[in-house]
Image 1 (cartoon, rainbow, N blue to C red):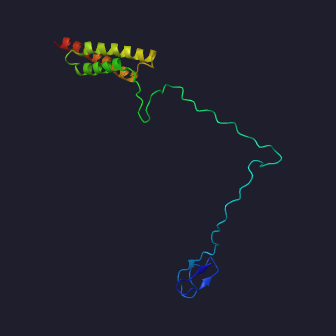
Image 2: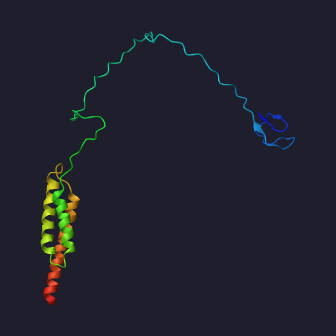
Image 3: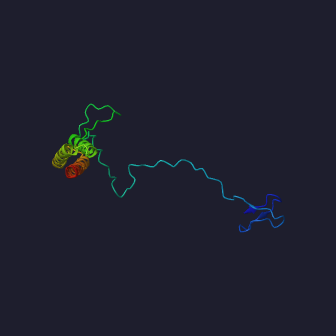
Length: 165
């Protein structure tokens, strides 16, 4: 049902949008019944809910058991410290590879490149054999590659300086 707010004419046609008398926009009247508030539901006998079938009882819940991992004497909210993997050799390999690459012109690439290759190889071997103890495989590969580049570049630089001079 709709009503004209200007002349208060009521229209039962819901498809009509404007008043036929004065052309005013019609507003909708809510004719739905008010919300019914009912009484609380009655309490029934829960013990014999189905007289043809015996009521089934659920088994009692299992007692709480502590988790399998070691959480003894830990305070609530204190973060647990995780032991990180050993990445010493890969880090040394990367540092030596970078230094060897920077010192190619000063003949430092040969010893630093060799050391970077050796420590990078050992770091990759440790990370591959014992991954639960050693990490840094990517660092070891980067140090190995930089060590090889610095060794080869230094060798080329030494050969060029011998040939030129």
